[in-house]
Image (cartoon, rainbow, N blue to C red; front, side, top):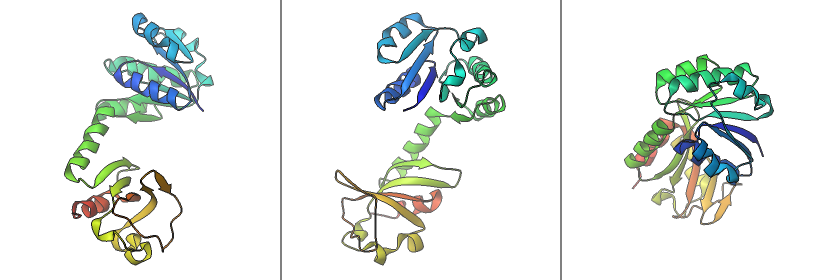
Length: 217
């Protein structure tokens, strides 16, 4: 369980806050929209109506006590920039800020953001990958070259042993785990026999894995 300070309750903020609460985290939400905060307050550990551009308002929140501070403001970049900077000045342990463009990301990192996310760009990028390969269920970028993919088991692998296929050597990817119906198989050995319904969680070079999945029927 983590303690989260979530600033900005637009669509992204509300979705993030709901997921965090469902995972058991303690979440304090802050927004200057009184009606919005009042309508959401009962769902969260704490809720505050405040303009976070005012550093005295931020100071009253005991910023260093939170594990993570999220700046989820999407319609006013100047506000996002100043709030990010002020959070770090007040001793925030970790600040994650939302950006819409690469130039915004650079400025947010420059003023102290520990991480910058692009919700719209990330969704578009993931959709583009899925549209170009029906065998990709989901993926997470780890850096500019490596990703973790969830892919459909290739038809030609069904009924064959892991040792015989040797995906690390022959396909350039490591199988981390396998989802079989409602079961997750974390420990794999060379005798594991693939099933046509398996979903494989694999790690490797992004381009290599995408090229592999695009060749599968």
